[in-house]
Amino acid sequence: SQELEQSPQSLIVQEGKNLTINCTSSKTLYGLYWYKQKYGEGLIFLMMLQKGGEEKSHEKITAKLDEKKQQSSLHITASQPSHAGIYLCGASSYSGAGSYQLTFGKGTKLSVIP
Amino acid sequence: DVKVTQSSRYLVKRTGEKVFLECVQDMDHENMFWYRQDPGLGLRLIYFSYDVKMKEKGDIPEGYSVSREKKERFSLILESASTNQTSMYLCASSIAGIYTDTQYFGPGTRLTVL
Image (cartoon, rainbow over all chains, first blue to last red):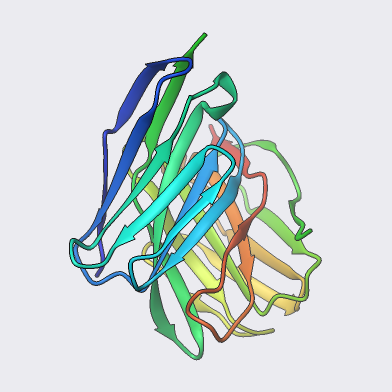
């Protein structure tokens, strides 16, 4: 089964600083998802990367997929308190009958100090 | 916007009780999923369904059952709740058929079993 390892497990940064979160897969990545979760709430979809070295940006968040390294990185530029939360990566795998499952990393907890 | 709702945000039950967690999505998605989320273990898939009346076991189905009588509704059932089922339960839905189908999550139900 596919396993995803996220690093770091937690991160505390000063407001305005840049940061990077990594997600490394034990198998080839075909679809890689990034989600954000506020404490005690559901997951909010951020972006999805497909196989092929894709890079996407939304506001101050950029995600890249390095298929050779089987790794994705999430980069936040000029962090703000609103960026605080838990970031999770998820990888898609086929589960039969035309549907796909997501396997998740354990998450990276980000705190942003004003 | 996709909307996934869950019947309760917080629930407290006693050991041995039968517990129903309900999830409803309004986007006509074929796939629906139930996860539990625990500190240090991340999100783990309990069951999923790719069509009405169809269900598939996820990684940790023991102690749970599911029901999908209508396309928009997916229920998770704890036949006899136990303290080790205290957890955050998250429901998700997605379109079927493509490996890049994004899963959209509900707000979660925090269940405490006393």
